[in-house]
Length: 145
Length: 292
Image 1 (spheres, each protein chain N blue to C red):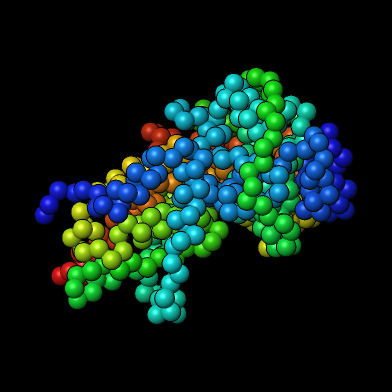
Image 2: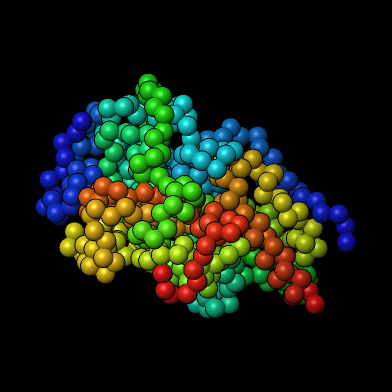
């Protein structure tokens, strides 16, 4: 297994965040929250297929699919009243969806600390994103077997 | 100071002046001397749309000291208030998500600094939106104010661990969920990141989950309804010395507001160390199960 590194897409997201002044960083997180794709019908109609991530302040649900080519597809569901949680999901979707399983597994677990959000969002809230990533990786590993 | 809201429901509470209705806020929104502030659990919810002209107060990143587990000090509070254009004589109206959970917490912190006129919007964000009232994503530019440095006064409304140890045997209300109270759960349902190494409750504390004081539309229940819970079921009396707690002191701020302001009990303290301190402390007594 190769060393854990940020893939180019996550690297770009991290650079986008850290280049912005504080106030604009929250706006960027809000954009990710708005851009989070809604669930496709096969999940929206079968919510039991989603895994709950209770570590987030407002519960979030996610599903992971690894297709025959080994490409990872991510699906998230979080209510509009939880924009921070949706924003975290949006970042992970933009940074990981469509990548090869190995690339997803190589994402550093402490990736969220590179976004410059600690003071703005608080470390406690950021833990939710680390929990999402951990659960995504676990599901990828399970489906690779 | 702005006029009080004369809504009939409020007149039954001990301090009707502590609440305003959505109608009152809509009517007074542009009045000089009023600042409306939103305080939410979600740090981005304000940015998705808020009451026009309202400023944001974040409990986590702004009301807490970033290093020590404590609230900001007098200088920090003065800086924060001045930055939001709030003066010592401003009528401050707080509102937020989740039945005003975090707004009540912010109000309690403002009380420690003795802000003279701070009120809650009954029903908070939920009711404002349910009524189809306008929202804005524009961050208001309020002129900076010059809020004085007032030292925080903790003794009256805040309890520390040593105070609670000395309080054992007197009335206490644990406002967490039944599973947290009995010790089945080491954390609040869905919030495992704020856990403790021991489960249970402080001996003698009775369990009244905080949200029982809120109606379905997020407003406070009527005087008659809250009397039935706290005086009726729990047997609390106005002369009692009462301590309330939860996990970090935020849910219990809501109950503190109910007991102190809506029912008028003078001696109610919030133990903000709450279960994250007690359940991690060495050799403090703990009760498990359904009995106090």
